[in-house]
Length: 304
Image (cartoon, rainbow, N blue to C red):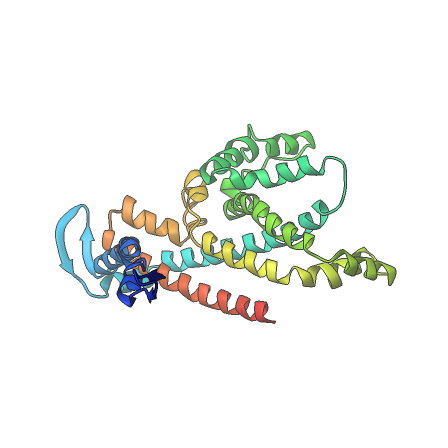
């Protein structure tokens, strides 16, 4: 900016005035950053602190135990069972949702009457709360006496299956997959719609059939979208809790106990805050190891 003096000369604006007009963003950003750091660091620091303390809510004595809680957990077979159940749950749901989401995305990309309504019904389960969906599957679908599956089994002369007693992990996998298939469908359907129509027309003109179109045109195009689905779902599936709590409570025995439910049992049923904190630290380490390899693999895929 310049100013005109009484003699008619043009006087340049002073640097000090220009510097005063600069907006200082630090006072506005600092509180948010500080709150975010406190929000993240304080719970983590308290978890680390209690993981090295012998602290049970039924015993007022709190004493330092070093790595005693970790040693106790690592020698406990329930931890390894919970880790195996977590891997089975995550791997099974990922396989089901990616395969089903891909096939449904190809289906819903085609023109057919009522496609909009069909898409709406296919996506609807994603907006149902985990607790509600678990209750629906437990009481309306899988109940051996009042459920639809039991009714269909009796209709064809078969014995109804008590899913949560005979196949508890399969039942939990079915419920969680039902919730996450719409997410995979949304991402993959968007990716298919971005596929160039001229490329598909050229393939058809070269004589490519439906299977060739799927395996050589559509599936390679969905590679990055599938990687994104796997990464996001893995992060959330490591912490599945509500479906297990509502349907099986981790049982029978430890058949459906994953890491998240094991920590809940230690903290709120056995009141062992120290052991639960040590389990939480182990879960954080494992989640970061899995996230590192998943993100690294996906990053290579995206750069290819």
